[in-house]
Image: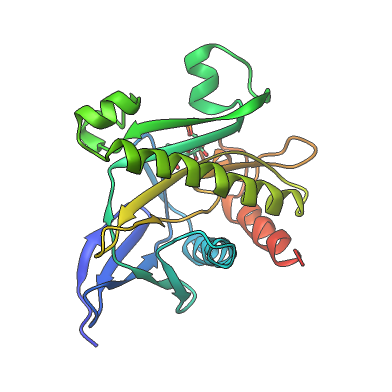
Amino acid sequence: MKRELIYSGKAKDIYSTDDDNVIISVYKDQATMLNGARKEEVKGKGILNNRISSFIFDKLNAAGVATHFIEQLSDTEQLNKKVDIIPLEVVLRNITAGSFSKRFGVEEGIELATPIVEFYYKNDDLDDPFINDEHVAFLDLASAEDLAYIKAETRKINDLLKDLFAQTGLRLVDFKLEFGYDKDGHILLADEFSPDNCRLWDAEGNHLDKDVFRRNLGSLTDVYELVLAKLQEVK
Ligand code: UDP
């Protein structure tokens, strides 16, 4: 099989396959924050994120969400449909935390009556600035119709995953999604869903996500393993 590295990201490497519309994502043992300014090798993280993300994308596919996920290939690899990623970080918040709390001067942990969807322009040189739908139009990232679809899909995905995590005893505080266009111009959920790009709190308020790394709260892989184990117990 022809296999060439076509992109190397912070958390994953992307390889081509014999099929132009299919890629292999290889999850790496690297944790980063502050746009890569802090970077550390975390042994075992790639396997855990691949397993967690594969588990969640399987559930989303089964629920009828259009995603890029085809199948998990090995401990660190998965097969994905190739998409052109829309340079938009779509964040959904159920509970205040992180940059939201900082920006608006509110404490962490306030339940939002209606979940809030935010957009950030995915651009490392600009440090991923906070933008709104009019900036999306100005930057020509997606049409108004496509953006409305992305927003509605994000809320639907939240409903599904909030419920899934509730069954594990965890609260889905917030998360970041990325979408892309497939060869036919259809929008698919892409990238990954793991504790690297969501916040999960247990009933005691413990953080079971990348905040463990960001805030030096303990072993990242210990909590990711716990998240995977809890998900695998869901019926
Ligand atoms: N997030 C992400 N990638 C980013 C920025 C944020 O995956 O580049 C996720 C983050 O893990 C959290 C949610 O998006 O689940 C909201 O993050 P926030 O804006 O609060 O930023 P942070 O406090 O993480 O810098």
